[in-house]
Length: 207
Image (cartoon, rainbow, N blue to C red):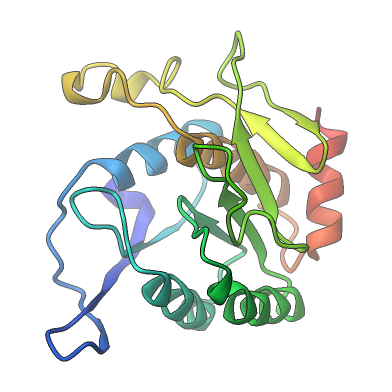
């Protein structure tokens, strides 16, 4: 998996309450490995930039989310995949600014919706490909309804993850979003600077 990761960094809040970049943050869970494996299973010809903002409980701070997203543009990615979001409305404005900038740069944002079903951001924002979980017979399947894409929530069918015992029962919309990011990567790998609207239409046409 490491051969696909061209850069790795992270963000956290220091003791003074400031957000600080830290490219030596320890890996405290296998979440990033799972996400990368799912994306790579669908599109093997990819380059990944890993941005770690999750703690050992797979949670973060809305300030870190908004700030780290604003910094990711410097890497000029085709897709920004987000395994998380926030239910706090006070972050809507900064996240909308990020969505607007992503649109200007032709970067597609893919975001997991809240597992509990609550309205969450940025998944529910216009201009973002929001993803929810559903059951499918094949890990390559996905669907679309009422403004959201739906994809598998587990790791069944992802061969490289089957021997890792600790993650057998992992489930969640963050994994669902990874499947959609993988499909999107496969669709646009030969189409640089694909606008959000076209990227979304290509995903729908591939159903």
